[in-house]
Image (tube, rainbow, N blue to C red):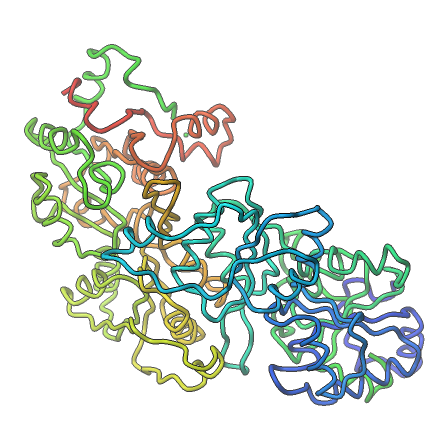
Length: 616
């Protein structure tokens, strides 16, 4: 391969070198969006180049991660744009997903987040799917709605592709199915975003996959690029030889990595999602995965091919120790911090014995705090909720992630507006520090995501985007958030990375992690998470001396937030089993002893908070 990972700029070569290079491949595989066309219009000169290469005797295929359309629809589009290609020369991620299930002898139903293309391709191989349009949930609360949501027991797979109607209903239902480890989790592809123009992007399938994965807590099998499965049939049947095949694409982590995985030469074109600056970052990276994404060659556009005639922590179960020993340990703490959901209460019901335990801790003269990642309610409303349950908590001793966001921005003397994807609690906390924040909760996509993105009005005074858990989250707010975040000067803040909230009956509610993953995937920006485990959430009481880390105990139910938060702050910690984490899981992590994972291991364990009463 003459230009292996060299990012050779073909336009800089002389004619002889180009001619010699052209002799190194017999088949070409083209991505579609960004290479041959952009939405409904062809890339200038792309149809003519595609057809000319065929005329020169090169085999030419279209291999796309676009799953909203069937192969027939893609063929019709190619024909309409003047691209000469046969239907069996078009390979889509929806087609690859359907044939993957067919080859496994799959006989059950598929629940789809995605477009009609997946439905059609599954139907072509005799696999039944659940209708892709969900009825709006009806109920007094989202929890009630989810508990009453109809579930098909014959679903054996969940398939996720691009879906302009993706919302909390579909997200929740998919994740409820995926609670069953026997249900297969499939993704058509991992494309994060699609370019509308040079300044505007809309969510791709990868962003929706990341949202589901964040809650399901397991990776999908991705059927589309960069999985070599897409072209495996062509290689098996001898239609193409990897060493004699060129992959032409516009995206490093799908197209170019796909070419590498297949053993093809790779040509990156600059007419789509990737620039030479992106390639330069990959070249400078020491990550082997980034190396695989470096193309062999580069062209500004495929049409240029014609113009140049080429182309820590033990997790001790305290109930197994003597009362005297545990009591001696607990006597060393002046402050005890409790998480809320899973430790003190579950949604609208206090956990048995938690009120008595919390108040008994306070009666010993210790400082007690509630520190929660709940941003749907403001800290004062959380305090009122706790008071209604019977918890005696001081006004300033309730801290939540929304308050942490407000504290952070206030510390920066932030004077601009904040766009919020999340609960009203965030807006109320920001208002308390005189920061203007807004959101849109009832917007709908009337035509298409592209039309919405082009027609939406934007506020030029926005200086930050905050994302938290949002029961009314939809693609409108995601598109707005991502548009603002295209400006690197605009802050990207997240409330927390809580993945999911079990609600019984093997069902869950989506946490903020899914919404944040969606936006992060599209924008390729890393948010600053200001809820647990970030120490910022307790910065003010630590600085005021209300909390002394050396004499503080954190009691929580979640490893990645509560226990890691304790370790980051120098607190000691107890994990309670009344929430989302099982003791066996922690013991496995502890016994493996991997350094990075040990920060997730608590010092002690109790089944429930009320078990602490015996030791006070």
